[in-house]
Image (tube, rainbow, N blue to C red; front, top):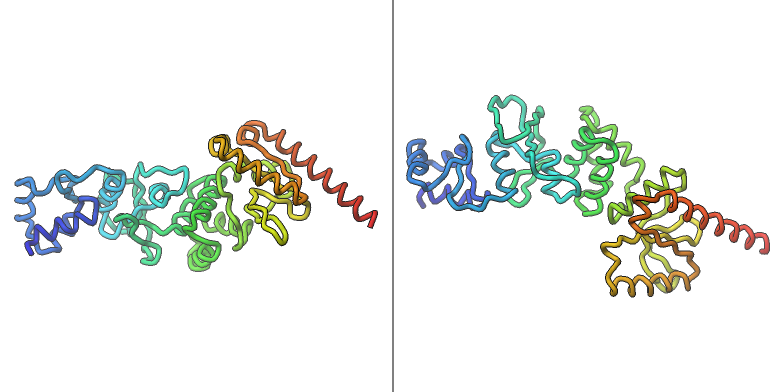
Length: 314
């Protein structure tokens, strides 16, 4: 097999890119590499990275180009890594890259971050791009983002099952002695949630929970299966003690006729099973939170009074 063919095979696994160091490691001489570029077998994507002519220009290629240009062993990090993992609210650009301290080379393609040492088990490859693992990404976001945004990133990664309470606590214990930035915030978020935490299924649910918290109302359990001997359905929120259920309905996902019919049947079954069901819309939750607080508070008050009267009679 010719060394140039080997170079192209590496590029096939790397979105059409190959670092000059990788090409030379195949046995290709600097002279033959320069000749391949002059002949059009490879293009210069950057001073240190080559591109196969005609390779599609994608977001993943742009991220990998910045990673390969930064240094051998560099990986996507921070907001860019969050975007690659599909965590809501993040974009791949500008490309954030972390590399081991001591590399002198500069790169205009990336926002560079340096650490003393990149632990191998903190790194993986996702769709051909070297990237920090989700737990480490969330830890780093806890150091750079404001608290609410970091909490949403954690919840979204947890909801997508990219991480868990156990995997996050393992990371916290591992780096505790080093005093990494973001550690205090991550530990507080974990303590608040607990290892058995069920994250919000959507930003709407996250917002509803925040509305209750800001109003001083007790938190409600999320994504709870309701029904005794016969399962009735899973609800968005259920009171810890009272038979109160709250469904946060997004206009986008519940406006179709089939959605309305299915919701009506499920909510009717919940009410028949003895639950008081409140439906709150995304418009109320985002733009009229005081109405949401009033309705939830009134329902809690009425049910608590009914519960007291029942115990008095008994």
